[in-house]
Every structure is written in structure tokens, then in C-alpha cells.
Length: 238
Image 1 (cartoon, one colour):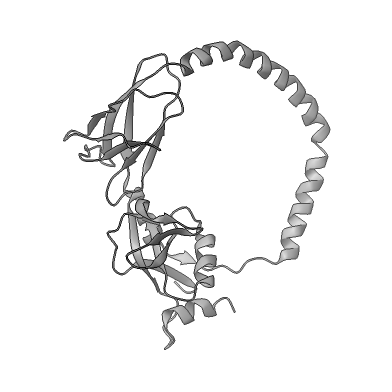
Image 2: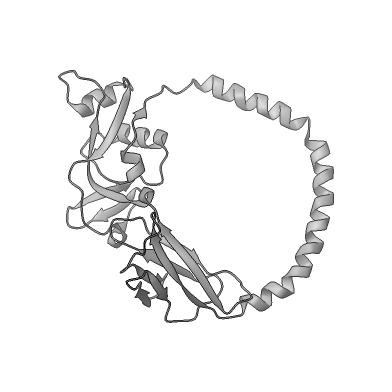
């Protein structure tokens, strides 16, 4: 595909990203003495922009899904078109503001009455302590043994058994967060919510799209000229 790139990891790294010192772009690997850019939360456009700025070798962290796709390089539209679009939206919005404000006032009054009736019940539930137990599965609904289950911000945790089941050793409160980590997968989090039951059963699913690869970034499929891949890639933006 012309004017398209495909990102790959030539030599996947086995280091644990969660142990890295946090940086603005991701984390710092003390072994390699370099920053690892976390691309997992970026859109395609954001990845292109970041790769354009970084002209030296890059070490990155990607999802499996990001590495399996070809990313088209589409020129950005001019600034005046963007401003014109915003101006058009503003004109349309102003015409409906008066009607919306009247409707919103009535709706807000109803919402306040409903919230007041629920407040007492929520306060009682929030004061409870809960036993959290459940199962961790992969994307084929098979159990994942050995998944670390840790209370965020604390040094207490457990691991899933051979059948993927777990029971957290400490009762938790509303707002507590359990962190689920498994080698090669993106970390999962579960926040305890108010419940009428003292025992809360949860199912945590690690999908194939959550697979994380980390290592030196290679860019493929821009052109077939004699220039190196980085030169060919960044030349598209000149």
C-alpha cells in the first residue's frame, strides 16, 4: 500500500514495563538506559506524529492489534478548513441553545429529586467491606493460572489458581482498585463498587488485543528506494 507504513518489533523485550520509572512519554528502562514510548493508548494519527518527531532509534510499547495493521499516511487538511468547520458548528449550535436550556432545567430538577432519594442507600452500601473473588480467563474462555492480583497502592495480593480462580485475602471498600497483571498482557484494573451482597464475584478477561509487545521499533513498507526506512518515512512529511 503506497503511502502506508507497518510498525513491527524486531526483538521483543521481556522487561516489565510496570517497573519502569514513569516519564512523559512512557517509562525509562534502567537496563537499556533509554525511554520506552508507550504507544498503546495512541491513535494512528498520534503514532505517526510521534514517529515523525523522533528521528533516532525508538523503543516502543504497542498492542498486538497496532502491530498487525497498515497505517495510511493521509495529509492533514488545512487550518482554514478546520476553522470553517468549527464556525459552522457554532452557528448551528447557537440556534438551539434557548430550547435546550429550558429542557435541561426541567430535567435537572427531576434528577436532583432522584439523587436525594438514592443518597442514603449509597452511603450505607459504601460503608460496607466486601469479599472479592472471581475468575480470570483468556479470550477463549480458558482459565489463566498465575495471574497477579494486587491491591493498588498496597503490598497485599494473591495469584489465580490453576482453574483461574482467586479470592482476595483482604476485605475491600468501595473505591479500592485491584490490579491484574500477567506476563505479555496489558494490565487490567477492577474498582470495587457498592453492592447489596457482601461477596462480589468478578470475571476478568484478558483478550488477544491486550497482548503487549515492547522493543526497538521498525517501520516497513513506505517506498522501495535506496534511502533507509526512516528517511523514506519522514520524507513524506516534507
